[in-house]
Length: 157
Image 1 (cartoon, rainbow, N blue to C red):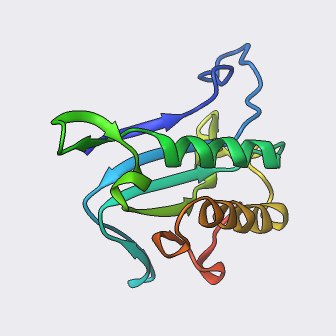
Image 2 (image 1 turned 60 degrees about the vertical axis):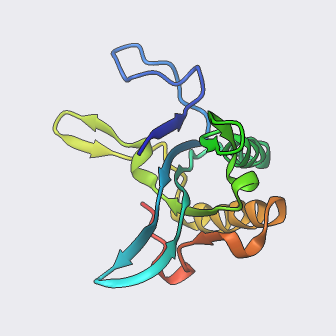
């Protein structure tokens, strides 16, 4: 399994003079299958494809969502059996599935010994934004292959 992280170039590890982080984050994992369980109950699952942990920043816009959607769906992470080339096909060419998971902890920082999520998008804004991101993925690819957490399972700060 491989993990690919899409983090903008101006995002830095927090130091005393950290540059501001201003864009959506996505951690992409190639999987043979995956599922999300909440309180022991499976709420979403996929076969072969990609799991995408999405961190929403408080300043994210529709253009950030478009960028992440385009990049995730077009990343060449899978081998091409007909040519023998690795890293040659994207999730759409393979007709694989995508599982989107909202993950506000991607914007966590340590303040002393305590986690701080103040730059993550607040829940009242994050829920509709995440729903629109899921819709964008469904419009850009086959809607039946895009899975996400049901609204009742959505968790934000």
